Each structure stands twice: as structure tokens, then as C-alpha cells.
Length: 126
Image 1 (cartoon, rainbow, N blue to C red):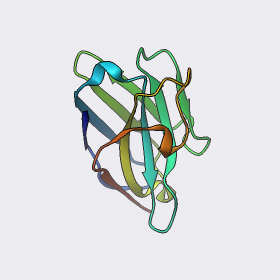
Image 2 (spheres, rainbow, N blue to C red):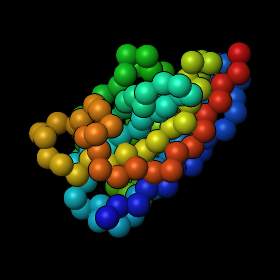
Image 3 (cartoon, rainbow, N blue to C red):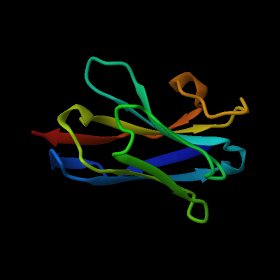
Image 4 (cartoon, rainbow, N blue to C red):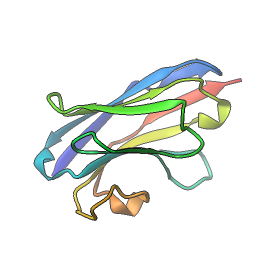
């Protein structure tokens, strides 16, 4: 079992920045990838960014590329999402997720991930 706790969400004006954190605990040795997903009201949960356990490979949704940066501190078992130049369309609940299945790559759909945090709300006003 892995427990994930997100923090760092809030309300910000368009153009502003936020940094989300996801602290992992439990059986983290099984982790293959960590991901950030988001879900806006009435929409499906979508991948924002993912990172391999060793931090070598990252991937971003086109909508956030060059604005968001995923990183991790393995000593702290924490994954971060630095979000810059925020737009109103970034408003959503943001979730951290843990992939323990070994696909040889980081999954891009929610079903690829086994553990989830409770989410942190990000609201961007224009």
C-alpha cells in the first residue's frame, strides 16, 4: 500500500504560479512512475505530467508543456509540480498518482495507476 498526500493548491490570478507537492509513504519501493492528473467539473480526469522513479524521463500534456515542470526528491519521497503562467483552463482538482505496474513506460491513463491522493484544488481566475 502507498499513501499519497497532495498540498500546495489554492487560488491564483492568471499568469501566476503555484507549486504542488505530493508526499508518498508506505510501500514506495514498488513505484515505477509518479504522475499528476487533473479533473475539472464535468470533464474526465486527464494526465498532466509523469516522471519515472529515477527521474530520468518526464512527459507532459501538450496543454501544459513549457509552463509546468515535474520533479522529485527521492530522499523525501516527494514529487512536485511547478506550475507557471497559469491560465483559467488550468482550474481543476489536481491528483497525484503512483504506478506500480511495470509497463516499461509511464502510463498516460488513470487506470495505469494504482494509488491516488485525495486531490488539491487549483483555481485560476482571469
